[in-house]
Image (cartoon, rainbow over all chains, first blue to last red; front, side, top):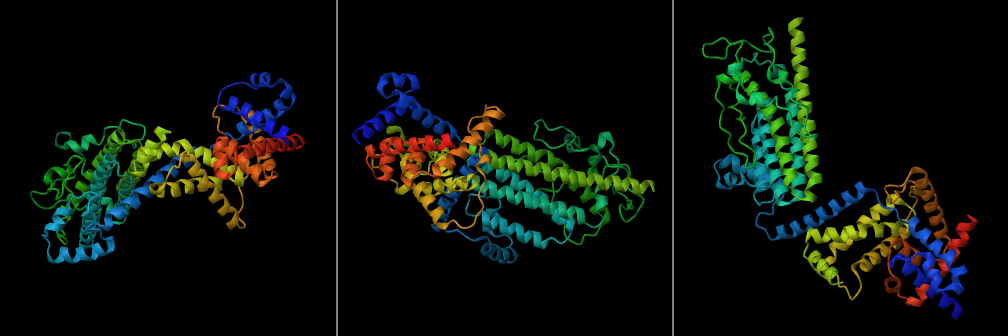
Length: 364
Length: 178
């Protein structure tokens, strides 16, 4: 028994010298020549077992698990803090309260103050609720799509802001909202009555084409950038003869066929300037029921330009944030960038398909 | 130890860099320990994540008492493994040949050999006594010292050395005979 204990000690000592001291098996055996024959195979077995156990979890799991753990801890901390916050509202409750507030006191200071709030601020639920109420109040699909474009613009600004602050949970939630709003916008564009008209912008005249239209043709610089927006989206063929798709202007002062309609109408002011991104083009829905088809056409053309601009600006802003963001923020930011790229690309592809269809209809 | 104390102090204040460092330093060790204890890669990943989530949630109450932080993590992992076996129902297990091998520059044939070794080793470890298996898991998979294993298992260092020796003797016999 004593010998066994002594041997177990020697075995462990050799193991430690090899594992932590960097010695070889042979060096250790020299220290205990009388036990060398017995020690050697056992040390080899132990070292083989140790080497065999050098397995690792999947790197992607390891990374994801770390992100999830830290996000959950952050969430717990925020919930603790919110308990003491005056504005720790639940979104549904906030929605109902703000609906009443917006309808009855449209110029409420709280709503106005919430307009520029960020996802980590107490008034942010008020901002979201206000947006939902505004969406409900807009009746036309084009108006809603325009407003969604504005919202996506805000979301990108918020994502960038949260990435810079290292607020990963909020950034991820905002990215999810952005994704949903992009999808909602795309659905509205697809189902909007007379959607092909969105594409039937009169052919561009070089000197009259506004700067943003040229910018959209610039190729994004990095590998994660979306495909270059197709020039055909911005420089659509002449409107089809079909009056239901693109009724020709009939009154003086209205955009003439062959001229880009964007030049005929000044941009309306953006009600809330995005804090991080450059000011977006106007995307404000006009009063419902305006029913002037030429104006509607003009709005569609404007909307199309906004879309093409956003398809360039949003990935650019997200990529810039990616370079400045802390390491932990990168996975969520990359996902937001990917979502933005994919959704805009799909939307622009859809618009191009519609345009091609319109061209075919023209030829027929 | 001084460095770890300061790291843990920062982690207790929810310093994400400190939490990340503790995670990075210990995740693979805990994972290997759990793999050897349960023989299921997917479960081991999820359980390792749970170990760290539990640990970090409770870190404000952590007291070192002279032991390294990893000892506390292994204590949580041991409890997690005990719970796993207690609750285990008819869940299918993922064969270990799907487990990732740590070295990234190994060629396919040596990787195949190593995968076979892992399977054999897990199978052999299952035939050890529970004490021997625990010592092998903590020493060879978890990279703990004899003193740490002794502290975790509530035994003397001499007893752990004896268990380690007898476990390796048994493993050698089993691996030699297949």
